[in-house]
Length: 608
Image (cartoon, rainbow, N blue to C red; front, side, top):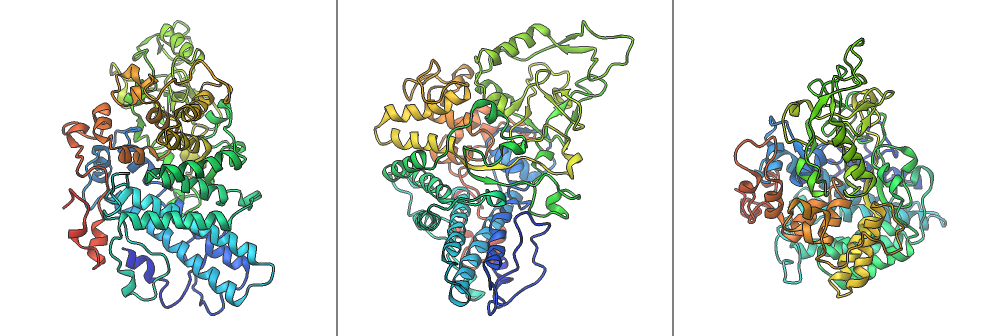
């Protein structure tokens, strides 16, 4: 697989790049390193695929979040059971031929390749064409390439590395192959697995270089999504956390907290920050954000005429709206509707009202046909009153309503014009004991995704300040500074409850074993662990919880808590979880078949 990624550039040089939001990033021509890149614009065109690769259909453009990580984390519940790889993710029991693991491996290593190509191109340009005033621009391009290479390697190592590093060890385990430059020959594309420590050392080194090269660089206009010094330092702090280097984590993250100029957005803006509102993009909390173009120019964007410029995740986790006939049985998904918000997550956010029932609508107008605005049956008004009061009185974690949409209480615009009530999905209609929330975070709520190209409109946060605050709290807690650590946990929680971030409040945690909203769901781990709960609630369905589950080794209790998935019909999730296997994805069979330096003997434990 990696050999194929590099083969196209060997002997020819670099592949043509693209602009920020290209209509296509597929190479249309090739050029020789004897005369290209010959300008800073040329060099930026080589850098562009380092970013656009993130929107590949096998990564953040489509499959990675809704079909892989969201199911692995059980943030969603998938009704569709016709895809074996998808079902394996929900069971946390992957095979070596799992499609989504293989796609992630290929796309992430393509990103590494693109970054290596950029670094080589920067060296070439600096030697052959650089002018006296180009040095800062070259440094900025190199800094971005190092940041992105580290990001890709961090994802690879967390998914495919045999172990995390802890204070007890783990660095000698098997990590992923390291490519720190463009291979000089086809033979040199066959690389064995490096150690876990070697991979993390590369990640940290790249981010340290990037922070220096990008120091003081600020981006404006169309460049706002580019990596900065604070992107690099925030990711470096996360790398220290992931390897339990608490001292360096504390120092690095404190630098971001104190000097980045970033601040937490207020709750109203936070709630509106994941649904495609362009006025919220690249805001005061964002440290690294992937730009998404809502215009797919047809043919499902990532598969059509606007490759790597958009995403179509909303096809899978789209909301459901009440049917035009006013019934839940006639409800419609604003896309494919293959996944909904997992019912067990509703109660984990502290929702204690139980499920609702439908009753006759006292305001039904029998002189008009039943319709979404004239339904015969409605949510029990007494229940609805309690549900609204729970929001108003903050007796439920408000982040539930950032992450999910509640039937009959929330609304969406399936036609882009008219507000419809959110509905219990049609496949749940008539079933007792269901909550039936839809996914809200990173979903399309202002239009049916098929009406937009189809394409999503919401940018993805790859790193934001709330994440940094929670990582900083973890570093402080593990350094014996609990009072300050609790303060940073509480800052994030206060924002969620619309309270002043820097002032003590009634919702503050008093200790690292204090009760959390998850306790009402009898959660044995998150119910009395504010650090774990806050990362789960704050970053829900943003893709990072899986890495927390794996580094904290809480997979079995997570599987036991969620119990089952709709697309899993044999047994329960807990019976599928295997501590010796499930924490790490398999090295893809395609890699073993194509790379002579990685054989079946080098496969991760538990896979055959």
